[in-house]
Image (cartoon, rainbow over all chains, first blue to last red; front, side, top):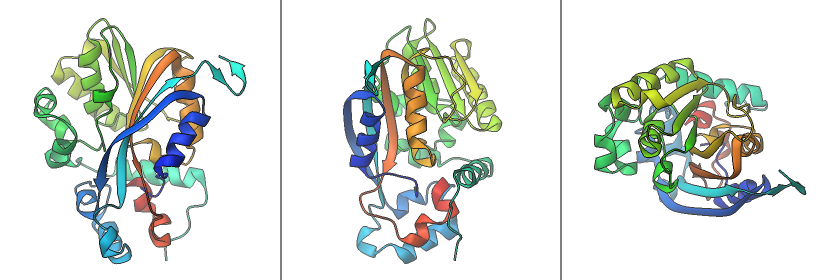
Length: 80
Length: 192
């Protein structure tokens, strides 16, 4: 999760890398409670999240999105 | 105080070790947030137990029979299997994962699901996809690109392996507010 980008930055990066028709949708919130379902979030990490993230933000620490795009015909000024 | 994760290789190793160290996925409660009962019913129960994704990229991929689809960071194979069902035996589904043990689990799940003849799993890195240029119609991925310290490189590799006009359907985590510094530099938080 530490490597997650802001939605706008994620979409911009997809477009910058030569994709077109970029669409972002189907947002699903992930809070501390949902994160705790995943074994990659260790108990120590969950405790740290509960301690460091303000209570009013704990229900939406991250948002999963679907990003759709199509390979563009041109990238970096060149047709490929 | 955790050390800063300054090096891309260090982050990759943290992620690799974290995934190699788990002995189960997030399980059915997490999977039920993402997949319909019909989709879950078509999967081997052990594949559902290994759910680690954050969305349902296959639902948005508009896969057609006969297409070739690549699942980047396939884990234990849930999305690869769903994609294989969509493209059918005239198509091809390829799962790519960093870990041999995940590829092994995914192969077993694909066999149990009856899609093994047109499905394969390849060990490799998403920053260096071991497939030829313009060799797939669709790339899917689920909760994986955020794990890479080289996201532009991952997207460039995805673009390289896609055929002209090929499609991308990715589920991934985004953040609206910056995480506290101590979480940003926490190694477990990179993998989680």
